[in-house]
Amino acid sequence: MTDAECSAFLQWALPRLGRRWTGFRKVRRLVAKRLGRRLRALGLADLDAYRGWLQTHPEEWAELDALLGIPISRFWRDRAVFESIERDVLPALADAARAAGRTTLDAWSAGCASGEEPYTLAILWRERLQRAYPAIELRIVATDSEARLIERARRGCYSASSLKDLPPDLRAAAFEERDGRFCVRAEYRAVKFMCQDLRESMPAGPFDLVLCRNVVATYYAQDVQRALFARIAERMRPGGALVLGVHEALPQGMTGVDEWG
Image (cartoon, rainbow, N blue to C red):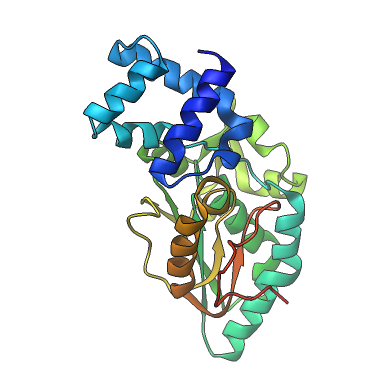
């Protein structure tokens, strides 16, 4: 298929799935490869035939939706984000919890892919902040809609390239090498992984910190974004923090969430 054919198909299909074209523009070549594999599996000649298949086989929309998942993740992704979490966000949340007599902080990594983000949070807390808050435990829940990614996250072993942005001291403390892979040490694995599609279910909370980066605000239509972020906000403690991707913003018309600080 040509790039133009793939783009035209996505602009037709994405709105029907509550997704938006702008989020997929840069990754359309990856999506084209997946679409090509799906066409071959179904024995279809081209995307026009696939359109017809979707219209006569409504169950295929779920297959298409699944292949549109784009898991791009690594440890310490977007350094400035984790520096802000370390410097400003977690200390403020921990101070508030301590003042309220609480002994736990609850965090949720929504759309966690293969686990790099929640493990980064666990490593950051244990190595950089735990000593300042010895009476507070950081509890982390991480969810993703793809079962294969959740299984990979539970295994907790990664290639060297996944760790390339992680500060050397954190890498040395938290990983051990096994057969050319880098595996998270047991003491940093206190993350509860669950397979959940945000559009269907979410953990109950309440959460002090929610990381929802490069998922909802990138790939979903504005009305879907508003509905999902409203449900996320319902699961946050008053004064909690919601972290988006560096190039993301809340949808227009979103209320009940104020800018941090």
